Length: 326
Image (cartoon, rainbow, N blue to C red; front, top):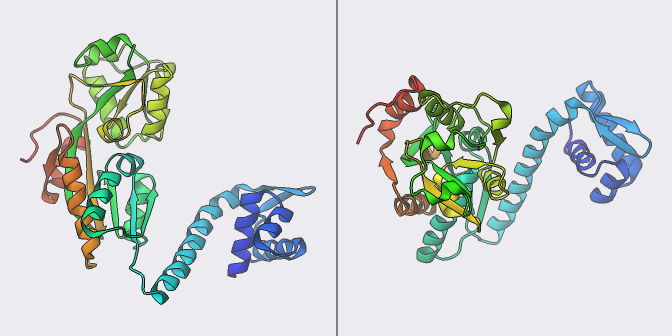
């Protein structure tokens, strides 16, 4: 399996035609076609079905593309880093975070770091919690920020934060007249929530179920994988969003009201680095700046990394409230 074959495959996936891929790679169309055919022969299954000048990726192609894209990105990063070393430039900060943390916390923290040490090159990747953990574990990034759980071997957890979730709704919504939104009233409305069943969504469902307000109709929920999407859906009047607070506070949308709930639905997150690797001074400064930025937010509570197990028991054990470590 050669690099040129992978590049040709990725280019065809991006453009949808062999001709477009050839133009993108500055190669001839027959050369690109040959490289893709050679790759298909080597791996033993077709990557595209042909329809005249256009091609349609097979199911196997979509499965392979994610890994190929990641590998090509890593190679590009190596080329860039090699050039930076040749120019005597500092290593960039390589960061991965869930969308909420990338949007609601990291910009403020990076601004604090640069206010003290000056501008630094930064590469920030927004990803799912599972992808953030994977990027830290394989050393693709120097620092990750994600919701719990973060108990994987190979991670150093530097600190854990906890904040209550919020209701986000249009300013002219009747519920916006409440200083605190009662869960009983919220349950009568269409709820916009996260689709991942193992994180915030699980705690919301458990809280509604304990109160006897779990929606029974499928049209009573709108699910999304992004809190920014949830805010936009709420602003359009499609429902009331129950969100982690970082997006609501860090990137508020005009026309929306943010209200606390009368029932605590905790959002718990942490900052991680690869275990056993030295933490570079800029990364250490960012860890501290992230904590400072989080501490400035309403109702933030810090937990030590040693509290991770107890927090998981509270969040995922029996879905019943219990005392948390101070």
